[in-house]
Each structure stands twice: as structure tokens, then as C-alpha cells.
Length: 150
Image (cartoon, rainbow, N blue to C red; front, side, top):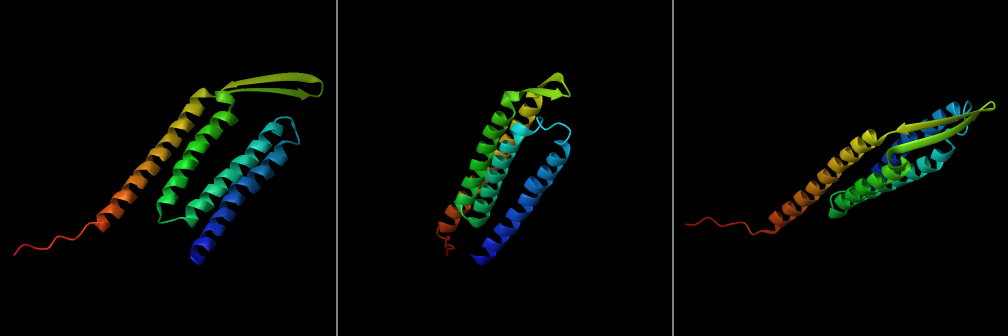
């Protein structure tokens, strides 16, 4: 059990560095020019990172069991919902104020959202197939071995 905990902690640290430390550093550098641009997304970024790290750690701690596949399925479903909520259904509308000028930006990201959802659906189907394979292997191990006729 201790190697699993160490492996889960290392994975959590790696995910934290690449999903939190680097993006927050980049956002803080860019937000000096337009602080309103990323204000709404910092909360979503923190939530996304927490969800991903929890599922990575839970999946790693339950490796070799059916719960690992259940956590992977749950992660795929939650990330699909998160993407739809974070991208407001694919239509982004930003209102910015630059030195007295008001700027409205509108972006239609529905095609990109559809691609991201499709990729997550592939991950979801992979996790379901892995769970089915895991259960089939467990059932196969429980079958009695046939004795040769003779």
C-alpha cells in the first residue's frame, strides 16, 4: 500500500505543478495587461485542478480494482460537464475596459467544445471497456480449470 501512496503523491505533485503552478504564473503575467480577462476563470481553474488531482489520486490508490475504472469513468463524465460549464456552452462573451475604451469580445467555440467533448467521450468509452475487461478477467480466473479427458 505504501508504494501506491508514494506513487499517488508523486502524480499529484506533477499534476499540481503542470496544471496549477505554471498556468497561474502565466495568468498572473498576462493579467497585468488585462486583469478582467482572467478574473472569472481563476475560480474555474482552481476547481478543475482540484477535481483532476482528486481523481488521479483516487484512481492511483485503487489501482488493480474495479474502483479504479469507476473513478476513471466518473472523471470523464465530470470533465465533460465541467467543459460545458466553463465554456458557457461554447459561446464566450467578454467585456473589457482598456483605458476608458470599452471592448466586447464574442467567440463561438462550439466546434472546439464539440471536439473536446468527443475526446472525453473516447476516454469514457475506453474506461468502460477497461472495466468490462477487468470484470471478464476476474470471472475467467474464477472458472474451474478443465481436466483432460482420458
